[in-house]
Length: 481
Image (cartoon, rainbow, N blue to C red):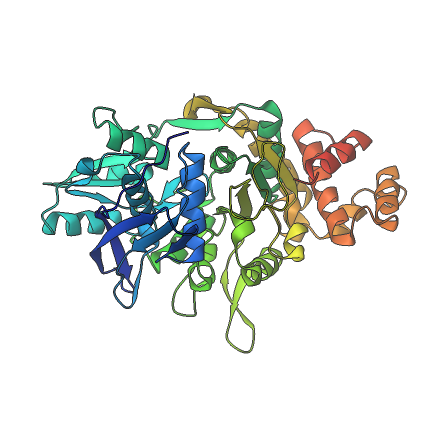
């Protein structure tokens, strides 16, 4: 752990804040610490404080004890969620953990997850142009965006994936920030059981929940899930492109057949997720793809309830009449961490406070498969040699032929009555499942989800009907986190 010193003078750090029309301005951020006062953090929201605290602790640094005052003068009508990285850097500089002289002429842009992962909900090319116009020479951004910013003239762009990488680079600029993985390389879970569970989700269109310790790479199974999905048909690809084109510049020639992937931070607003009658939200732009909700245990319960309803209906309703609006059929991927926070109630064996919870109980019935990934359990492979995708495509073709009369493509979208009818009324599998329902081990909705996963396991084996082992496997995949 890094020792914490005391600095009387606030250290200025530059970030950026964005207005409603994506116009923005540079934002000076500073932090001042007084160790003589009771521990408290002022100047930022409680949500931002928890994000920054958890990110600093999971980066191997110590969050300071004392009265911490953050200064971030955000103009009216602007949001400051992109200043998480700058706030963390300012705190570490004020504590003396990193040299303040290294912060000159550098702008830090990024929102932090509880695990220290960096992201940004902004057109970063526009942000870098603002840095250039302000006369500053360096900018640090999330690594996933560097391929779009490499040609920006007059500004040196540095990329990082985590807060720990940024703090190490500020301490020693000779250390190069790790560039993103090449497009032909992909990180996959090293644990065979996690890989197999993700393959089940991809084959059957099931929803996934991933948890782990504070520094576990919970997004790796999500990206692996997205990579396993088969290419879209031209009709589905055109429909998905039309939805995205309402709110973003989208290439339509040649038509991309890659399923969309949308990642949402837990600070996302209702408007960002669901949109309005005039603006398409992230849920609709993930149509026929994956919607990843990061740190979902910290989402608002109202969003959780609405998202559970959306996964069942497959379309977003607008207006008082409740008429159907835009389609939004996606695979839901939820991620959560055991985070370090002020509450000292329940703790994991490692000592970290476990605050994983479902924002609404209805959402629990929507998640079909749960996995837990360990820190560092990642392998890098070539996309051309990605294992599991051929089996997923074969299983999907089998399911599409079986349910062609219903007009659905995956087991997850098949009504429960049809799933049961395909087994026959005398099926021993149904009797066992009904027994679990009568004893209260499963609700009716959960039993239907387990049966859908059972069919998917059967398709992956290439069999005509599920066996008892498939049911047991499906029940294990639903084990509590």
